[in-house]
Amino acid sequence: MNRRVLVVDDSEVTRAILARALRGSGFEVVEARDGAEGAMAALRDQPAVVVTDLEMPTMDGFPLLRLLKADPASCHIPVLILTSHGEAASRYWSLRTGADAYLTKDHDPQQLVATVARLVEKSAAAPRTPGLAALPALGPVEVLARVARHLDASLLQATVVNTLLERGMEASDFHAAAQGALETLAQLVDAPFLALAVAELDSALVQILLHDPIRAADVETLADLLVGALSLPPDVPVEIHYDGERRGDVTVELDRALWLPLPLRDAEGVLAVMPRDPHGFDAATTALVEALTRHLALVLDNARLSQRLHELSTLDGLTRQLNHRVIYDRLTDELERARRYRYPLSVVLCDFDHFKEVNDTFGHLAGDAVLREGAAVLRRCLRGTDLLGRYGGEEFLAVLPQVDLDAARQAAERLRLGLEGARVRLSTGVPEVRITASFGVASRDELPGPLTSDLLVSLADRRLYEAKAAGRNCVRP
Image 1 (cartoon, helix red, strand yellow):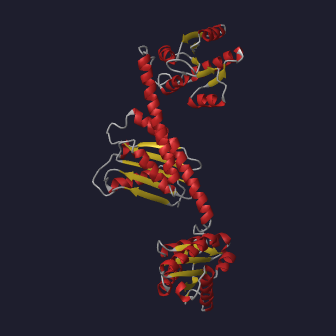
Image 2: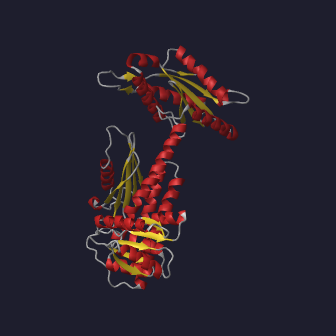
Image 3: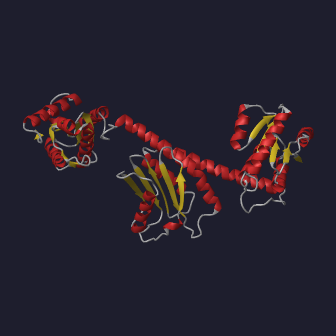
């Protein structure tokens, strides 16, 4: 076993004390007077452990530590920081930069020996990078150049991480966060496309960023490969977003793409990056992208959590439509906007017919299925600018901006027909359930004087009862 220990300290007295204690415990000791000399010795002699001070001339302990932990020729060597600094910040930054242990110079000598012995065992078990040997011909200038290169690489990675976090914080939803992350990575690699896929229990997202006008068939194959890389339960909806031209004539060899798993919390994810060079990415680019996957996963996790929290506060948990509070607040806002700009606004109040019979006959789980499917039908039959919320129980409220009473009545009729044509399949052995509903429609132009949300919804509610009294499955007025 290699028991060589490199001691790096600008104090000759300190080096002599440490060397005597370590040699007395059976270690071979090599000495260096500063960080630059220590780096040359570490890369040349490949010690089992490096023990270094922090404050030294030419190059102090932190650049030495960064170089040893970043360079493939020395990253396996454990480093013990031994310094007169006892401040918490110094200890934190040493361990954060990669130090394996930290002691102050007022330590018990036996503690030093025990720590070095533990690190020697750790060094013996550490994997080495294949094909790398010691570097015998490095001088101080070469060492400082290597430090500068590693610092530049660290600064680049830190800058990209900061940009990823900023784009994630600015994103309005998970889709925007994924798009921003791919756009950030696209500035680092020369690639015809970048893509990612994320799967949760009840949904999945595929985001594809196209730099080249790739053939539609290849883009569809890429989307299928991304979905196939996820362990999706049956019937989980997959949302696919494309950014870029996907109906071009550029052919890509998808089997050359770099596929990296994303370490997400309570979700599954994968990143796919296609190198433009037929020989693939160089080692530095591959290492950078691999190092960034953890930070990319953190950005996506935060975006997922933020979106979930927003949904919990704004959406009805069962139907995924706006909840009572939010739909009422949005109606108030739309009323104020309609009053200011003098355009029409109408509401449609909908109540599912004979809903209690569904619960009593098939159970409440069947009732939940009817509500979910019915809400989805209503949403599909409305315009993108219309608002839909669960008003309560089996009642839904639709807010239709810039729609007068006649147009709102026609919209309600479309909703009625959509529900009438829907069939909800409950479970094996249970027949399909038909959905019908009654509708009450009201417009702000019908009510003179100051108008509130309560007055408008109250008028729609009265007309809803008129529809029920008329036999249900109809629209009033």
